[in-house]
Image (cartoon, rainbow, N blue to C red):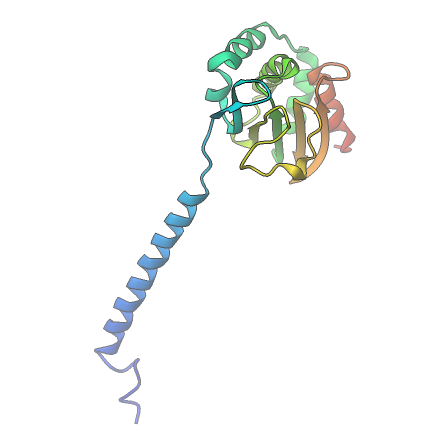
Length: 194
């Protein structure tokens, strides 16, 4: 009565195994294609018609910040910026527990970005902030990142540094700090009540 049961047959489990193996390979292949399709091109440049010159656009990394015209500003300002040690120590003690992310939206054509972005990244290096917890997005004069939709960030001026804690925005530094970059960052972190 139970001889037709697939669990008792010696042939059918092998066919099922081969079927499952093929399904598994198909799923792995599909996942690879899907992931590779979502990878973003880093440090893309395009000719901004409002500026009549090439600008960084979309996702960037440190390589994009340190090359080209922006790289000249970045290296110089980074080297010259000296953050207050006592403020750095306080920030470091707060962010050391993790859960923080920072999004920087900037324009490599913008004089405020040319000064503030290198200084801000010097502060991040001083506090040993993990690079994988930061994201950089370059915009054109229209505050657009072309193919990358950044409307959810409501960027009005650049640079804008957005600080997140456990995925929730807790504050911004927009264009220029009210005090200094490190003091404004500390104020944002303290405003959380930590």
